[in-house]
Length: 87
Image (cartoon, rainbow, N blue to C red; front, top):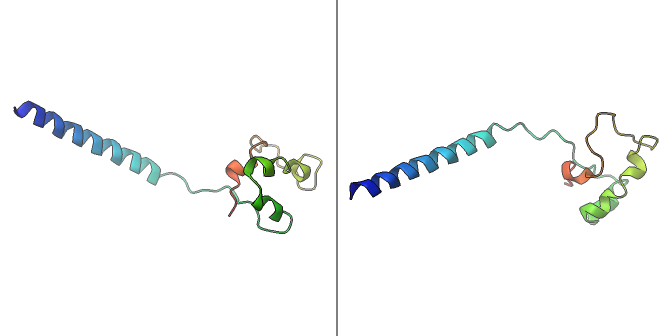
């Protein structure tokens, strides 16, 4: 009879250790550094659209020869609102 109780205690301790590990990992995550989508008159139209629809128009200004080109080392440019959250 004592064997199942010992196993239950062991599983509970193991579960708590895993939860504590996940918590510490998330707690030590670096702060968010990506800029949010600017809330100005140029970007205002994107706040009412779905993400997929809004992202289709980003390249009109943010292409290499556009008004506001992105840096060379910028990550993939087809999922803008995945990183640049709307406030």
